[in-house]
Image 1 (cartoon, one colour):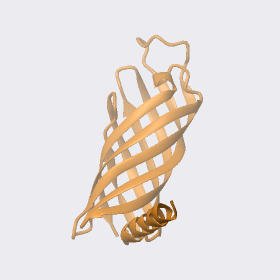
Image 2 (cartoon, rainbow, N blue to C red; image 1 turned 135 degrees about the vertical axis):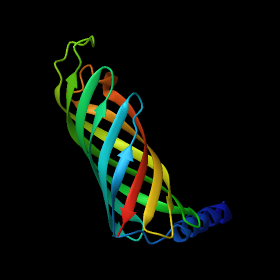
Image 3 (cartoon, rainbow, N blue to C red; image 1 turned 90 degrees about the vertical axis):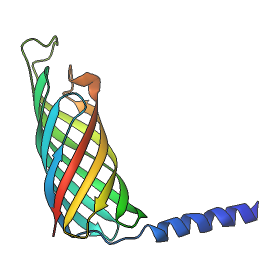
Image 4 (cartoon, rainbow, N blue to C red; image 1 turned 180 degrees about the vertical axis):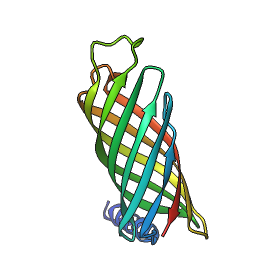
Length: 164
């Protein structure tokens, strides 16, 4: 029992040490995509440590049922996979405003909303200052999500950022 516990602790320590990779101090670009329409966001990332960063996104969503404007903030942890490939995960939230199309059957008039978000993805850090990523960001409505995707939204996107 003691041996397996020691082995587990050494494994966790080794994984943590292997994942330490320096990330760029700043990155700015676009995050494009959505689960049920089209969305575009201006995205900014700021490193906090060698393996964590903050991400701020500002953008809109356009579907056949609604249009929405969103501001999102996330804290992400970055882990190395192999070479220039990293994977990342994070938590955060955001605020926004939604306007429903006239044809959409809802009791809500739209307006302000607040949500919590998670984030998981994979990225490739080129040798030039270019970063490509694909991520999945589930969002859970907290306030004002009435009629807006049943309080849960899957956000899948491709990111392209310039690092400096």
